[in-house]
Image (cartoon, rainbow, N blue to C red; front, side):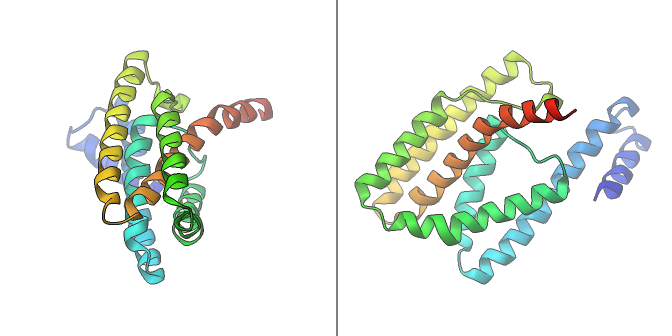
Length: 194
């Protein structure tokens, strides 16, 4: 994947679509998109096989949408990211989601609203490599909060028909918050190891 990303970035430089100075950024961006597409295809096939494609789609959509504006921990290696991401989707759709379905409505809404509040007050945390300025963090916090409000509205409307959206969007929100909480600790641990 990395070699393909390099070739695509080199082609972009040759065509003057980007400047040579932006080559590393382009490689990173292309590699990220390729890996994300590979993840979606693989996760789609696996969850379709297990009969949880809808649940996985809801979780993945909410998780990825929020992660793009909340940041959080990123695996240091592409293959590790793929394994963790697929494992997380399977954990949520095959184990946690069905377990949460056993909860009474009040408990489901209680944990859901708690997660929404924590996500709402949590500030975005991006890896150092992102070079996020204070303005970028403020703007992403606004977008994140608007997304959370929209998710809550969809949860309320869809709950009348099914619990599926509430459960799997809750899990997407929950794991975004967990990713943000663990990010500084893992970053500190990496610095201490170096």
